[in-house]
Structure formats: structure tokens, C-alpha cells
Length: 290
Image (cartoon, rainbow, N blue to C red):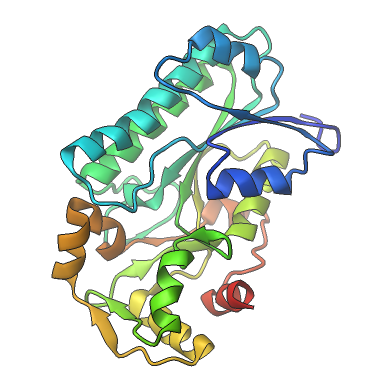
């Protein structure tokens, strides 16, 4: 893949926060950016036509996990990720000139709680989210059979000015009613959107990187530490708290996303020379609220 030349980048899930920011980052004036919509009735042949001669396929498909998980919603979470990814790989198989790289989304929710993890950790949680991520990654990995480099992007909590988790975290703190979630001891593994975009570019330029990659900063922190920094930067009190039972009442099984402790480190990115612009939470927060 000749970096510096114009790339054909196809993004499945371009309308979301990460997809729209990637389109902006890779600048359609310098690269060909194509949004790909995969619906139930989209034929594999029509997907293959679009994937032909594509340099990079970025798969961000998936309904948001930050919602109450009813049984019907869990089916949506599965089909929007696994069925879509399966279709993409089936389409790759039909291509004459296949994508050189498939970057497929996943999440740090794959990992067991309360223990540190690097990219090669195989200590997985025994819950719905972890099983979902494992199946999602397994579908993406099948593209390797067609000589496509596959990277599973295990996203931590994504912080950005434009939306994502910060749009839900900031308002109560700005109103002076922010505080810890549950006991606050859970570790939060996170990444600033700018570092996420730069990490995608870095992986495109670094053929040695493949397999699972943690998209998290080298400095995870506890929810209590995060709460203190939010209070200091915004100059607001932080003595309120949201009890765990209330979060479970609102989100049901989806409360795992907020309450589980995930301590995850970006070993592959760091060892290959990637430098984070926003490694520490306070720096990321100051940029977001500036």
C-alpha cells in the first residue's frame, strides 16, 4: 500500500462519530472515501463491486451499546455487528482485487474485569458483551483466508468534543451534580478521538501490525480519579454519586459497560512507536472543554 498516494478507503458505519471523523481526517480531497451501507437486503455481489480495488476497509458497523439491553435489543447488537461483518467478508471473497487491510471495530469489553490486559491477553469476560466481541472478531478474522491483513480495533471509551461518552458525562458535572458511578473503583480505559484517528493512520502505514490492537491510552484511571479531574478542570463539586443499583435499573444488563473495571494497555501501538497526543485524561479533558 503506497502511503502518500491517494488511497481508496471504504467506511462501513460512516455516519457515526468515529466514521465521520475518519472521513474528515483522511480528507476526501486527498483520498477516495466511500461510505458503505450494509442492510439486510444488500446483496453480497453489490458490496463486492464497491470493495473492488479498495486499499482499506474500515468496519464500524454496530448499534450503540450505551442503551438498555432488552432481549430484542441484544439481537440488534448481534445482527448489526456479526451479520454485517459476515457479509463484508463474503463480499471480499468475491473480489478480484481485494482490500489490502480490514480494520474492524471491537471493544475492551471483551476482557475479564479487574485484571490488567495487553493486546495479546486471552483472559476474556464470561458475559454477553465479551461473547459478542469474540464472535464479531472471529467473523472479521476470516478475511485472512483471502490474504487480507486484519486488525481488530478494541476501542476503549472514546472521548471527543463532538459526541460519544463525553456528551453524556459533561452535562451533570457542568451543572454541579456530577459524581462517581457505583463505588467508583472501576478502571476506565479510554482514548481521545484524535489519537484514535492517528492510530488508524499509523496502522495503515505499519504493515507489521495485525490481529487485536487495544485503542486505549497508556494511562487508564479509576472512575474516582476521573471524577476528581472533571471536578478540578470544570471547577464544580463532585460529591454526588449514581448508585450501582440505579445504573442497573436504567441499563439492565448493559450496566456492565459503565460499572465493569477494564484496565487495558496499548502494547502493540506503543512497541511499534506510536506516540499519543493525549495520553493523560486531564490533557484530553482540557482539549475537549476548551
